[in-house]
Amino acid sequence: MSLEVYPASPADAPALTQVFYGAFRSHVDTAMFPNTPDGTEWWENVFSTAIARSVAGESNEIFFKVTEGSESGPIVAFAKWKRLTSPADHDRHEEQIVWPPSSDKELCDRFFWGMETQHEKWMGDRPHYYLDMLGVHPSYQGKGLGSKLLKWGLMRADAEGVEVYLAASPLGRPLYAKYGFREVDTFSPTPDYALVMMIRSPQGQEKAE
Image 1 (cartoon, rainbow, N blue to C red):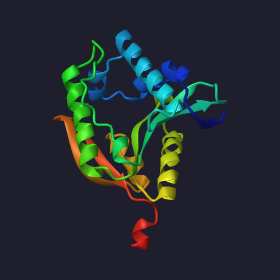
Image 2 (cartoon, rainbow, N blue to C red):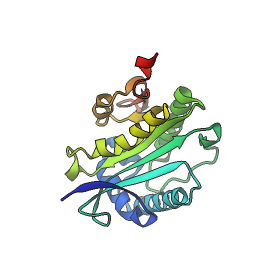
Image 3 (cartoon, rainbow, N blue to C red):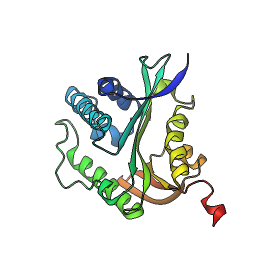
């Protein structure tokens, strides 16, 4: 069966949540978001609300899904992109997020505050695309789905002449290096786990210079 990329809808939130739990399984991920009923409810609400805002044009976020067979088929992968073109697009959270009761709240605060700090440090207010999240269900890994979801942003960034930024997990790092991302920094939310901040220049920029 074919595996194709489609825009996600708010109704996809439960399936996206299940892919999230299947894809993000490091000890840091499971400490922040154990697969519990309250965690599932929290993520379903986060996905549904964020996608509804995206569809309504109220945010700079774009959600995609990969389904098997047809657009209404089982969701096996997803990505969340952000297109940041002006200082107003750069969301700097001032309100305290209410995490699920079962989560490690201290780790969640440290992780996401650190991610935002690194993002602001390296990209500032200049226009760019940000790959905020990419997850592939374990049963479908190795089939090129990460590349499918990644290329959406790379093509647009190249066309607009802007950079792409992301924070790579240890497992995701080789994929991004393959597509021209360079490592600029690391961030360790725990002593035994490091994320790598990576930036990709628009294709052809170095040659032009």
